[in-house]
Amino acid sequence: MNSGAGIGQGLLLSAFLYFTIRVCRDVGLVVVGGLNAKRLIYKVYLLEVAVGLPLMYLFAPAYSGQGLFAALSLACVFGIVLLLQHAKKVGVFYAQESSDENRSV
Image (tube, rainbow, N blue to C red; front, top):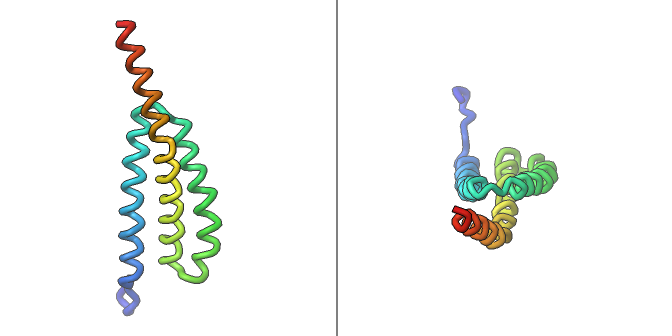
């Protein structure tokens, strides 16, 4: 940092975009975890690893730090899409489970 090498605006912007996307994904995972759908959480993480590692391999050599953030951002977007695809199923299952508990009380 002292030798004139700093963090560029492109790297800061890509980091900001990645963490913004990741916050949305993490909120979804917390909600799914609260609904006790642990399998879906594992599926999301597995998908992100399966997508993120090859993308990092492709993007990092060409774009360095910005490529890493771009690869991780795309992996998080795939995770969000998977969460959204399963949102209705998880919600319906939780609603049925809750109504069953209320009937037994």
